[in-house]
Amino acid sequence: MADNVNADILDFVKATTAAMGLSLEATIEQTAEGLRVNLDGEDGSVLTRRKGEALQALQHLATMAFRHRLDDQQRLVVDCQGFRRDKDAELRQMARFLAGRAKSTGVEQQLGPLNPYERRIVHLAVSEEPGAASHSVGDAFSKVVIISARK
Image (tube, rainbow, N blue to C red):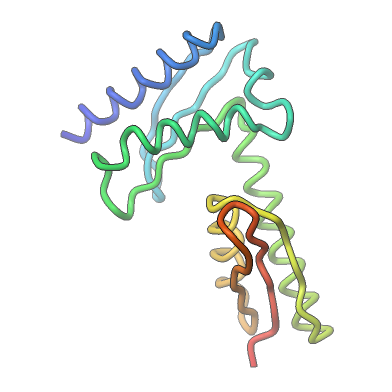
């Protein structure tokens, strides 16, 4: 069953990028967090420009199309030329930095606005920092993450 879902997701992403007129190679891999579709090719810059808005939209479409076929704990990530991987690492680093700052100064730090995927990365990174806590404030896609020292 999993292989069938993987093949269907891969076919969906390939068909969507082809419909966009993009020439990209797509592969899928199983990671600890879920499925990761990796796109590569000379048209990749189309998906990564403007802070990766088109890549985010493609991930949203794929997630909505297959959410009922994936386990509740399984995430689907669509990446292009390592763009999301690099941005995720940058976000984790910023979250750890702000957690350290909140602990040393006692002043809450704010990060955002962030989409749900980005907020999850921040919350997970902060949860790994002893003595730091985080919570989201705001509405839907314009939520910010508040990072504070745990009392």
